[in-house]
Length: 224
Image 1 (cartoon, rainbow, N blue to C red):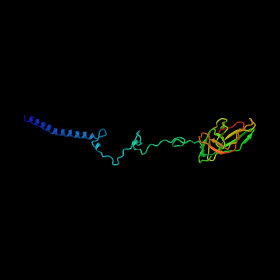
Image 2 (image 1 turned 180 degrees about the vertical axis):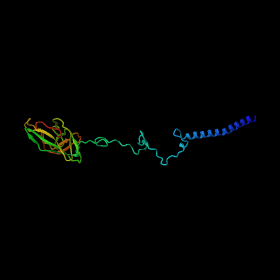
Image 3 (image 1 turned 120 degrees about the horizontal axis):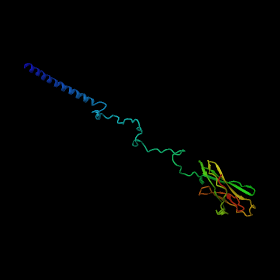
Image 4 (image 1 turned 135 degrees about the vertical axis):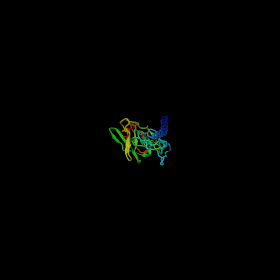
């Protein structure tokens, strides 16, 4: 009987010694599990407490993200695209020659086969190029400003526009007939010639005693 009691006592003592060991093992396993929580699969408990970089600048973007600054970060107004062909803004002023840019003269008559042609010339006196296109309006005047006969009729087709460089000259031909080719009547000799350059509403005048229009024929050709 003593032997049996001693055996039972040794078993009980063994269980008492095993309990603290089991508890220690459980504690070790718990610590190991806590340590695994900081691995790549989890979130660090200090991530939200990390300090903001002192520079305050955002990290550089990578991959498909644009590196351009947002619209609010750009300085100044947006720049307009250049216009193809040179000018940054559309031309607003006309390039037509005006009376203040021109000098007008009437050349000597050139007779032939009963026809007489007088070159009416326009010279660009400005420092820039300008354009004339079409027919001038021409009248012959008396000294008191009254019109002799009627204004010159347009003869032929309208030509292409002509660009005058500074100092360049173009002309339009005035035409009439020799006396006797178409009757014997002629208009009075003029004192002034009045002309409107093509496209202009302002006139130019010059002192002249020609042409003397005969045969009731007076016309003007296009600028060339």
